[in-house]
Length: 364
Image: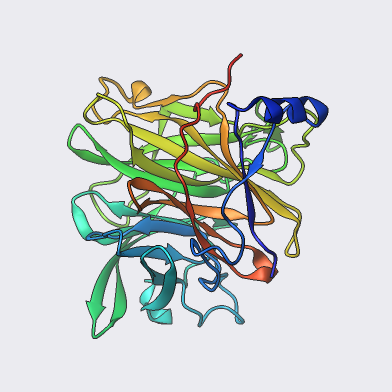
């Protein structure tokens, strides 16, 4: 299995800046993420989405995780979701969430890439497929999780369809919140290879801009089995911090989204954290970065002001040899971020990211 080494940018120290000038203009110092580090749980299996469950404490934390298994003969019978329990941020265990093959209200799930909680419903979650394959899939499952005799049962109580006007997106991230009393979602296209694609009237796909992800705002429909609609005026680009000379090829600008309470005087403000990946295939090499993409204000006066992206964001963590596909809020000495990986042939890991007193944006 690949060892995980996380490199943390330390802009305050002069010798790092000198090394940066000699290398690629950015300096890094090693932080704690060796396989022997107690903050890494090596046997979680692949994780493509993750959200913290209610009632967590630093001593014991539970996360609902999803796996991006495909709807085919070899993977149809495998568990698509599980509850990952982390004890004292050192030891972990995974219990599958039992959802029968015929319990998906039609086709078995295909390529689940994100999970988030339904606001004000602590036992109910949204599990998102990455998109459509032809006319199939493209669903967000509404799943109720019940604990039964030390295990977990999942019941699909409804399905929402993803928008159909443009099926070229490949979604990787999803977060939920309330705005003016109603549940809203933000979706993130992964923006891999060059750009988010939009279909022109003549049927040809053309790149938008110079690469990057796209964020979509949508209200959660009032009735089950209806189609989610993007807010037409609230589509915002999201571009991961990249380095001079870095190629967009096989680079995913967004592989996960996470909401975290902002350390600010504003009572109801959140930071939106994101991860990005470089993925060259099932055997790697992989590397990831995590950064603060912007702020989310549920008290915003207009939809356009709900999410405000950060200009020139700073990559707070650079992670070598792992492919981060999930982020969630974890509890340590104080709230911090944790990650889940899908390292393809090498399995998956859960890890804790130490919060650092580093600037969220680069100086011009």
